[in-house]
Each structure stands twice: as C-alpha cells, then as structure tokens.
Image 1 (cartoon, rainbow, N blue to C red):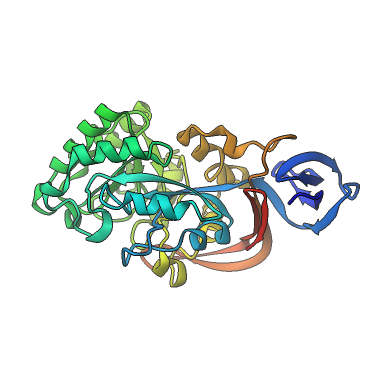
Image 2: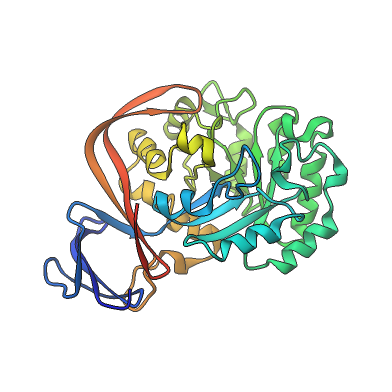
Length: 364
C-alpha cells in the first residue's frame, strides 16, 4: 500500500462520513467525503473502526478439536489482532510463535499453565504436567508474544485435582507478573473456590455461560461476581461452543453487569458449524441484546487494547499505522443462536467487509 489509497465515503463510529486517505500503510489524512485523491476503494455504507481484537481464540490447528488457522479466525473475520487463549503450553509455544511470524494477523498468547496445552483436553488432570520452571522459561523466551497465563478450571479439565491447578497458577502469576485468564465451567471446583483467587487485571472468560456452576442465581449476579468486579477483575465473553447464554446475558445487562471484552473462543468446528461463526455474528448478538454500536465496538477495540496495554492498536490518527476494520450494519433480519440452542431474531446484521492490517488491504 505504497500509493495513496482512499477509503471513499467511510463512516466513523460517531456518524461522520469522510474519505480516509492512506499512504505506505499509514493514515495520511481525513478528507471531506468525495474529496480524497488516490486509488479509490468505494466504502459507501461501511463503517471503519480500529482493528478488532479477539481476546480468546484457538489458533493452533495441530490440536484438535480446539484449533484453527490464524488468518481464518483473524483477518478473514475482520479481526486484526488475536490472542490465543492457552492452546499451547511450554512444550509447544515455540511453534505458535513461529507460525505467527508468517500470519497477516497480529498474534499474542496466553500460555497454558499445563506444559502440554490442549494436546489433551484434560490438561490439568496430572500435576506433573504443571512444570513451572519450564513455564517461566517460556515466558522469558517469548515475552513479546505471551500476555498472560491460561487455566481452564472445570471438572473435565482438572479431574481429581480440584482447585490445586489454580492455586499453582496463582503462585506462578504472582511470581512472574503475568495475569491469569481463568475459564469457568462445570464444578467441581465450585466458583466459591475459584473467584476469590482472582486479582485486579485477571480475566474471567465464559462469564455469561449458562451451566449450573455460573455467576448468577435465578438471574441475579452472585455477590462474589460483584466483589470481583470491585477488585478490578476483567469480564470476557468467550462465547465458544458451550459457554454463552442469551438468558444469562440478558440478566447480566438488566443488573448492570457489563462485559469488558467480547471474544469468540473460536476454532474450526464452531466457526464452520456454529454457534460462533465469526466475530461479526457475535457482535450482532450484542446489538440484539440492546447494547449500542459504540459499546459493542469498544468491546473488541479500546477495552481489549487497554487490557493488553497496547494503545497503539486502536489509534486512528494522522501519521499512525493503519490498523483498521471495515464493516457494515445492514437492515437484514437474522436468527441468532446461543450455545444452548436458544434463538433470538434481530433486524440488523453486522458484517465484516475488510481490514487494513500491516499495510495491506484484505477483503473479508
């Protein structure tokens, strides 16, 4: 993108329509609509935001069923930055780092506290797989890639070990300064054991799941959730195959429990066969829940960048690199499905149209 490229008649989130002029992968100017000069890309009817960030994906295709190709769940979904949520542990984080170098999507990662990662889906059932010295070495080696630690704390993962893997993860987090992303699911261990261990900057993912062991009781948020929010614990959606409930999400909104980030927990099967499909489909679900477009887009831009401590990912300024997502909001009815088969119909549909990532325009 060395020549001048004009995104003609693009709409900003605040409603302004401009010509966004790019040069050499950077933002050159915001011109009046129809006045920009250069190679024209007609964006009439499309919005532009800073590049979408997905804080919870699985981008290591060697591990099935929870894996996918980086760009298939990144730029092809309108997402310019992904964070792999613990697909790999210390044994194979080198491979994820290597594959990230050839991707068009920006990649960060949570390191699975189990050295085997998702090679098995009961990766915390053997304490011998929690090699903390090896994990610390991986963090040191891949300090630009790794942004935190991932612990999947549900019965099918921890087996007979209960809360012990999370206690080990807490100690590693405290020693290394790496925050925790904790997957919550079926008990044991119960959430009464899990949530109090989380500190400011840690992440609860799947916080809107509808399983029996969830953060709401008869539609009301549990006190431990309120206390976690007051401590500065970050709430992440992590939709996934079995971790997002419309009913729980509606209850959360009714009680003022707001998401911090909207993430997909996407991998090949739930991308192709649902219920995730892609980031645009998930964002449409939050429009249907009654959130504004600004709130929804903030959930995949500024809120995620703030947690990552990477404000450069969301700057749309003259002279800055262009890291952008182009999308439309069409008056088009859609049937939306959560992880439990519950449907909601909405009159609008968000569609990813393209991205500008690392100086390249990529159409979705």
